[in-house]
Length: 316
Image 1: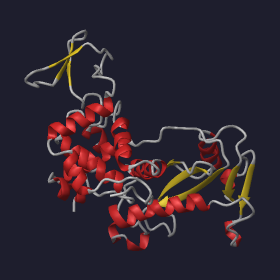
Image 2: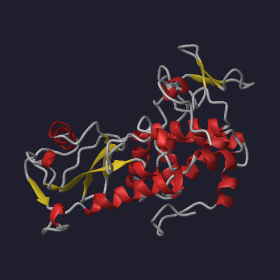
Image 3: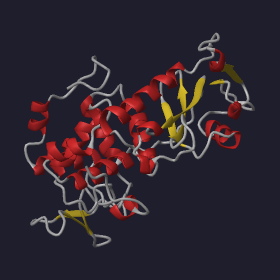
Image 4: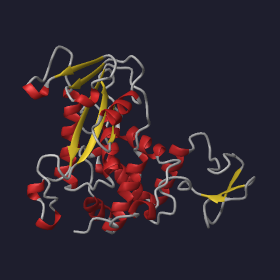
């Protein structure tokens, strides 16, 4: 299967994927090659004086200087996971090649694991896809949207009864670099000037040209040019936010077409997943999988942290 939206990319079919990872040991070798292309190193001290444990227990590697055992999972989002590395590789493939994302129900069925494990696994992969924080040179587009279910569609005991439109939804802001097509987006507490202006400035180099709509939260941005959506104006010379509107469309297709619900508590990870998939869309599928595996290093997301202060996982 080719990557999403790019037919010229070199894809990987399901048959080829099965041939790449016939066993869990082959998946381990692949993960190790992504993490240690120049030879195995200790994830704790960074030392290269390591020895392979013949039995592979308790872990397949031991660091001589710090005397610690470790595996390719150590210090990654896969740490302490009991799911096989082969299934992790397949989950990365499904995440990389599904344009709108992959639901926990699909992972549950395709990988033959519980939905609870699939939900946790998917969020750990999303944790690895968090925004890297690059500055855009511009020109850039800045825009905002709201994500969530419509009040009219909610069950009576879930309605806020505070109006319609944006009520009960979560605000998301984004910046798109027109030169590269890269996007940086995240959940924001509100759409005030005190929130939106620092959000845009933190993602652009000083002096970059910024195109927005007429929303007052962008009013004091330097080098800004606006289009007036309120009076039906969508393009004014170079001023428009059509690139980000396209991105919002993809985010909402992921919401309505795949997940059907993204709680405010976890919404940021879903937003990062859609943004990162767009930012890496030019990569061949094999390279995209390798990039996702590399981003797992140095990231941790425990089940306790994921579920703190809310429901454990979406039950259906």
